[in-house]
Image 1 (cartoon, rainbow, N blue to C red):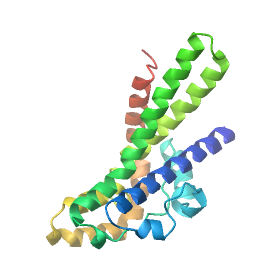
Image 2: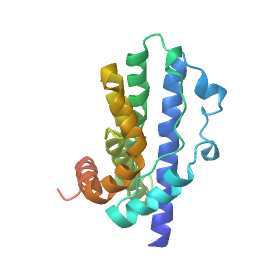
Image 3: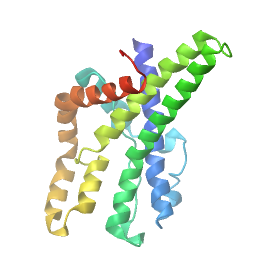
Length: 212
């Protein structure tokens, strides 16, 4: 069990690193060099890890919600470097969850390819089963990250998406949410974690034809 939790946390860490790097590359492509100047366009986990979001929250999520979720240090951006501030903030926010969906779909395709090679005798069944097992964990983890990050509570990406489409006269709501975000995140993990985990699990099972 301990090894499973450690392996899953490792998968979560790499997935959230890709998630944050995607924010950085999106911002850079849209005209904001801040992430590049801060050295955040790298897959080196050391540059991204957050003691709370990358260690404490994954453990809390596992023991309270039965799944592992977390985040890295947010990639800092300067929205005033964007040509179209609201639109580009929205695109940068969407880049993270979108990267997790791409990772998940990529591992589904690779798992199917490995399974096919095993069926033809090109590789051993044991190797294929091991890879498919790892792939299921990767896919489930990335769908959990994508879904949970779309919740509109800071520091999650859903809040940035909400703020990007919300009229400026409601900025007071942004300040309030940013002040209470961490408490709300812990409550969300405890009360909605199993629901979000269940949705991600259903999607994963459907993609791998588990139980059919």
